[in-house]
Image 1 (cartoon, rainbow, N blue to C red):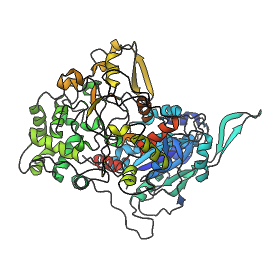
Image 2 (spheres, one colour; image 1 turned 120 degrees about the vertical axis):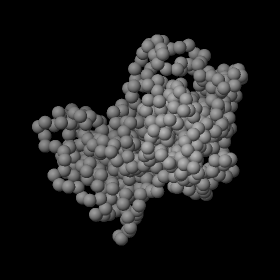
Image 3 (cartoon, rainbow, N blue to C red; image 1 turned 30 degrees about the vertical axis):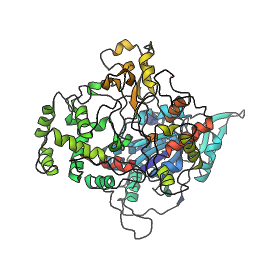
Image 4 (cartoon, rainbow, N blue to C red; image 1 turned 45 degrees about the vertical axis):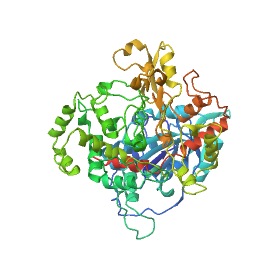
Length: 595
């Protein structure tokens, strides 16, 4: 089953201020403990009330998103809010309940991996994407995926409100001017992965414990029909991952074989354990999964560049690990060939995992009781050594295959309606006017969306050749930045403006600023972009290539001004969204279920 989705519609008042603002009011049940035990999950059924509608919305980055895409394959709770609401038992209640549920999920990672929280404003005139991004900044980095949405206009949002019967009336003052307030009834909708409404909550029984019980009940169901047997949780671990890797999803070629390194479930399980284990870093604080976060597309969406030992900022973005089995060469500068040796590059890098020697890592493994016998079982009696550890990590990474995206079903599966018209127009641009396919290759039977070659796109050249700015902007938290003197960072990070890419490997001047072409699969879920994470969203990427990059003699000649219209840029972004596989939440859930 997919992840659960909570869509909040009343937005503004911070949770911490609720009690202070409501000292003289009677608070709704959602703010305090229930006066009765919540029902036992699975001891009751939730009938289908009706279909859940979709609609065109905007993310907090201003990117177009479709409500139906967000709902599909997820358990969902949908409510509507607006940012300036001052009724403590209205919109602030929705945010407070979602926040309490959000905190509860910290202790239940398996459940959290199947939950997505979405907050949608019905006041797009005031609650712009920027406002929503700033509002949501305090709720990021937790156990569940919480997104904050708005719409392009009242007219764009109206069909969504009508479909859910969510009446909203703008209030006016005595002079007939808009007061900035709305009259509405708070209603919260529980929606299943098949986009069917299963419950509707009002103020009187909107409570996190009840939401949790209903979510668990839905997760136990296999179907809505009476007498349906409970659905066991999705199979996780080495055997499930191995089965998917052996038969990759639609759109992917057969998994490349590595001589002498056959995949087994035991190796995959061991590799996953190593991938998640912070104790493999020199000070026991970092794991591979803390930079390549499973729930964030096996990258880190909160930071443009990775953070290493003792908080040191690194030069490059943490590349997504989806379909890394097909990547050759490895690393953004192409310096490595094998996933087994890649793992040791990270473990021994002084700024990343910080270990000073192979022996340092192996000695630590030997001290940890949970690894006793695991290497021997996975490798026919061979214990932990440089080869077996690298192969185990490689085995897990090779199973992170993701496909069966809408594009795959449309192009390779024959489903003519799998991609909407905007995405189809975007695909024609991708192959034609925009020329993206020249580097992001598509085959006859599968598509990796990369030529696995290294190119100068202009980003590295601009960072190296442009003067050091007088002020540096640091992102302290999502939406929170600080401008400081670059001298204040001396000794705390690698220099940002001199990443020469492949040249650092070959020492050949013609290789300056060349970086590997990334795959575009799941690109909509793996922001920020470019080797240094300098482009925050897909709109910025399309704009960059549309204007021809940073023209200079070494820039790849295929990068040129494209002359795309606003509609064409939107269509191209719609196509890129259609490259999102249907298995991202499953892979994240598997990692969350690991030790």
